[in-house]
Image (cartoon, rainbow, N blue to C red; front, side, top):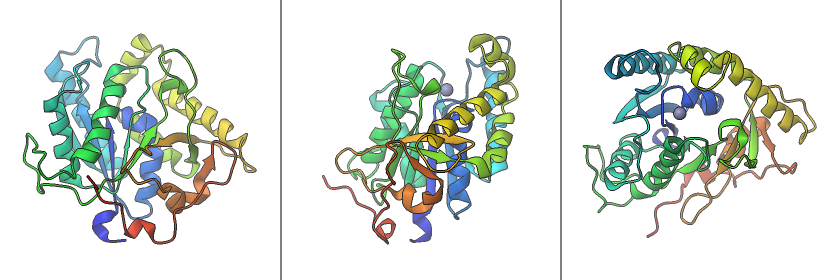
Length: 284
Ligand SMILES: [Zn+2]
């Protein structure tokens, strides 16, 4: 695997989304030597009852930067506004520019089904950008160092809030990822988002947002334990994008096999040895 391929990019709609949904995965691959990039499409300008827009954007940008520093990640704040993330031409080119700038081998984002349109649309924009970034004639709206990415990256969707779609139906993950060994770090990252404590208590009914994440991670750990011979304390859950032209092999099983529990209760398949050295390219 070349150095440039050891990059993971996580894209969330708002500051703190990454910490809730996939900071454990990021910490585990960082420990394998991956360069970690975190992007937020917005700066969370609606995540306050009291602070005006520019003030809360500044506060939340600082908190997201602090969380990235806990992990040793590179932060990419984009210029979208809360509740204004749309699947339109400008937005697709903005997110594609991000993909070209980072050129990651693995991408993580929101579930296509989640409680908030911002999350679902971010998921769609990231899915599109993973493909569009490799197309040389697709021009982006801001400068990026290359005209196309080297390949379509592996794309993973994190579990939706409370594990359900908007009808309350369970969303079934492909696999659980045990994050117990990096859970302190995940907690430290989320704790950086101090401005959200009151907001999440009043708007989302979370008595304590860090403890809420802890209880949710324990619940996913219990689901994983029920499908495994071992006890899993804290877990995250994921699905892999397996549409045409995206890489299908289970690279996270190859990289993090000891932490993976298949949601079907079957042993996870590993990628063929060396397959990560030869990522699939765009074939259109
Ligand atoms: Zn969010």
